Amino acid sequence: MPGDNACMETHELAGIAGPLYALPYAEFVGARTAAAKEVGAGGSAGGDARALAAEVRSLPKPSVAAWAVNMLAAHSPATLQEVAELGTAMRAAQSALDAAALRNLAQDRRQLLSGAVKTAKALAAQQGRAISEAVATEVEETLRAATADPGAAAAVQSGCLLRTLSADGVDVVDLAGAVAVPGSQPVSGTRAGTVEGATDAGPVDVPRAERSDRAARSEAAGRKPPAEQPRLRAVGKARTTPTPSAVERARAALREAEESAAAADEEAGRAASDLAEAKTDTTRLADETRELRLRLDQAEAELKGARKRHELAAALARQSARAADRQRRKAVLARERVLRLGNTPEE
Image (cartoon, rainbow, N blue to C red; front, side, top):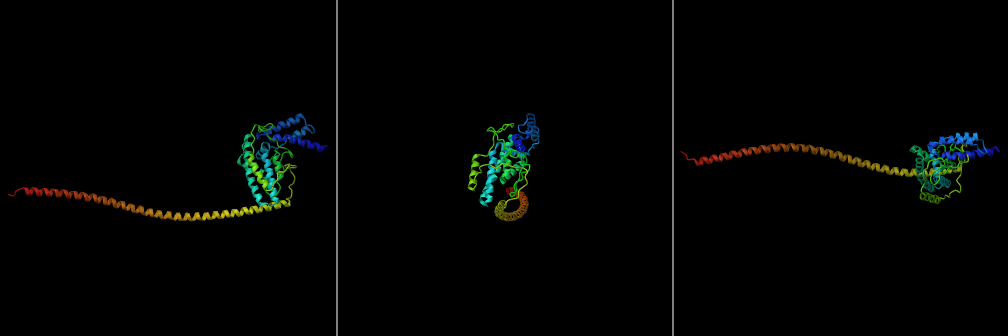
């Protein structure tokens, strides 16, 4: 039947697309062309070879950030699974209006996303493409969206992501044109970290102890890991209207924001108090500095006068010493004359 043929062709396309999107970024276009030629030359069971080859040829090249997320799907699927499970726990906490659990899970999310971005950077480097900080920010935003919406989680886990995702915390994530082939499965690397047609790269994953610790905190918050991760069933659907639970989640988020704002106000008050104290100390020290400078100027002026008096006194002392020496010599001469006169008889 026509519908069965379409499903088979989609399945075949997904099977071809998965390995392509797991390749190093620079190899995608060449591998896509080669795959389309192979499909067109070898035929396709259950579908038109030329049509399938055209679909393969039209597979879009992903953005660099989407490609980095695809590297996580191919080489570190456990990281994306943990992102999806944490999103399930956060939505459960929002529905239950559990602000404390939501705060704890938000902290877990920051740690998890930070580690996931580092893993994505390492994987990208192993695949020959270093990603910039701007791209890393887009990767983090996409993974954050995966915690906000199960469809987004399935999209990042598909391994065929084409563009970055974003979430506003209320509406579902817009998935239009986000995935190359709906229902595609990621191509996971082997223990050696290889995928078909890709360069060798060692697997990079989140440490098991860290995952276990976050899992324990999530279970303490009332989360049970889902038996099966939801898959991406459709791409390009119209955005749905937010359900009442979305309003409840928004209210919980509002309460959390208000608590955070109160804490920030308290911190700002402490900072203002510290600023006022520092300003007082600055004014006091500036006054003391001015006073010391005045005293220093006065002391320098007095020292200059004292040096002049010292020079004058030294000159007078030298002059007086010379005068005294002259007087001593006169006295000696006068004494010698007296002695001579006393020893000479008068006529």
